[in-house]
Image (cartoon, rainbow, N blue to C red; front, side):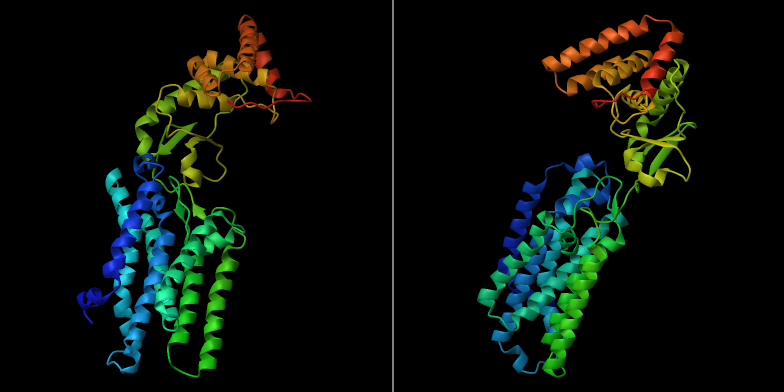
Length: 429
């Protein structure tokens, strides 16, 4: 059967526009972050709109698969001994169904890539291609169910149950349920889903589809087919559960995959290539801040590398001493210098009294020329009577310290970094 002939007689003629309209609504309402905020990282741009569309694609494939199977059964196709094989007939009628569901998975990411001016990469195709494979499994499963169930009742029921079974796993525990459902989470900048996280849902959907397909094929004793089908389906479900049972909230993901540029040495500063325009300034600020603090008596050892938090392990070598900071978004002067200053003023204790911590940071900010950035951080935490009182105490203490000799200041900073009080209140930099 030609594709155009199958399309003219398919339920896709009337159901397809409704499915695509729903996909458009999901895309518009589910876009909480503009594609431009993903810094041209294609896997993240592609994964973002798909989070709300997987369940719709699978449900549409399963429900329409039921309908097409019931239509063939009502037309007594299987009783007329068609010249083509049963599988070929099923494939012909399922092709339009699968293509509509594939459009749900492919068109929104393509729009997001075009809007952000980003070219697709092989890594960005991992999630759509896996979703397309799972769509086929859901369509096959729906077709097998439609061969024995009344289509007017079964098609909407199967579609709704399929949608609920997939979509609701995002908010359920244990976590392995969401990892085997085909409802993939979004990925961040520099991240790529590992192959094992893609295999688990394919294993489950493929096992169930293959089991139902064995029941549908009229070959061999029914009891034997039933036992074999149950074994195949159980193997798929249990295999997927075994793979994902120990995964945490997020599935296995490779990080630090974005191209990275580095500059300088001791420390070497590394940022994702999309932010390399700020690399030279970041390196200068980092080196100047470390030199100034060391001259002021701070016992700081320069790291081998200062890397952005998004570079992951790709920017590190074995045995390297690496400081990770938010360099990619630090596009203003002194942002990198302030982060380096705070990291260099390392307290021996995990918790430090609030006034002491802020006194050390303000002293370091004044010595390195980061006072405006320090004050901006304090304002971002909110201005209250309590915070104003704290800052007044901090200012008085730092003014007293700055009035001392260089040797006295060196003794003061080393003492504050090294001593541990019995009770402490932590603070953010």
